[in-house]
Length: 574
Image (cartoon, rainbow, N blue to C red; front, side, top):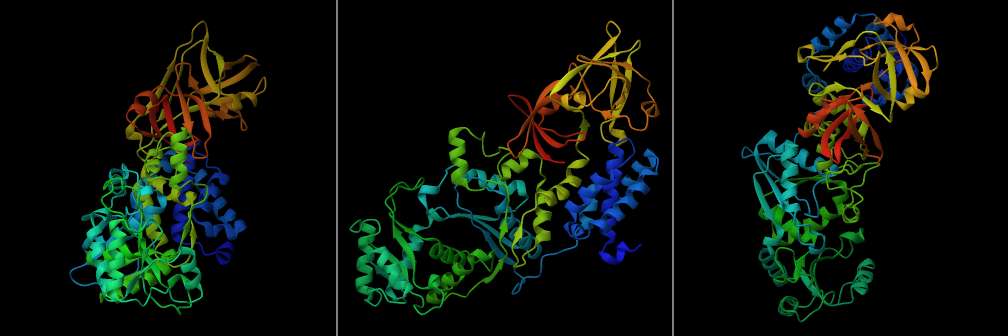
């Protein structure tokens, strides 16, 4: 077939698309939809979008092949293709590159968040990549709280961040907190002032910045150690107020990048620290404290985004001035995460105003929100491992994360009906309506949802979605999924009569719609875009919500149940 010549279709792609087709067929009475399978294929393998005609031909062939099979054969084949977790591992075709300079003692790496709130999805990249290397080579992975910016600290973060890392499967061996290390920073400051590799500047901050941009030296830059140390003591004892003096690390005033020229290392800040109160008033800035800590903690390899390239150049001067050996630095590309609020200051405003429920609100990009949605941490790990540490910038794909997550959660998610914006339908029937549906189409041993609906006064009362009801016409025959066929008798109110059990009785074009009996449980579906959908679901959903179970509402998607104002469900993905 000529489409194999136009686009490189791998065996992995074909196997994955066939799995999509089998899953779709099992969920829809043995008949997969070309459009649905096409959408999942393109979201999983974005390269297929470059040649939609060839992709369509491939998907059509696979879907037609699957649809020609019996339902039992479809279920047997998808089981024989391996469990979903095995398939994810088989599909992994990338590995992180080797790190240079690894010794038999292993490596020491670190993850250093600011405790301004829990971790978000962007943080998961750095923590997972570093953790993966430490697990590969052996050694130590360090958690360091960088909390020397007192106005941004949220005290609960000291507990929330380790919880997030544990959820991610990240193993932490040592933990440090920068606010416990002020005396270390002060000692290094004195040593650098004494060696004239740093100086105390009392110029107006804006004047100092203007001179630096011109490559012009601060008048205090060449003053002797005694003068520098005297000014340092005045910074500590309160003689100087905020912005009246700062310690600056000397670099190269002729450096072509003005950002690398002399940089501020210590500043005066009279705001009390949330854990240290007013014990300290001279705070280290990022590049100074990081360089000191990375060296004293023995970090052998520093892995971070390329937005830190200038920071690396600044930090190398601290290493040089102190006579310390450099670690191995690697900078990977930046990642943008669309349609997601990651800025903690804005989230805090929303929390205070009651616009979001908490750090685990489904509309947020925090790891707690990911867990509340039913995202498996193994899916996040696999996503970042496949992205790797290349220097190219990327855009995070929620569709791709969904494709990684689906195999991990699918087998544990029982299937149920959900009816949005329900309206009643009365079914005229002389006998009980009896049907059954599998709790999971791939796992018959798990059992079925059995339906035995006894008529009262010759009718069985059910609920269907308003969208389905408004599309009906008198005389139309449709199928209530996994129950029976009915023929529409009236539209307002909606009434129908029993019209047989066999699928063929509804005709080739009859609709299949979902339903819930009148004892259904009210449920609110919560979506990341802020949309809420209200409806009812099958009664077993109630107990499952108290357990925080993850389910699939058929033809809608995977949801993590929880008890809020009644039964609620956070959307994971389709």
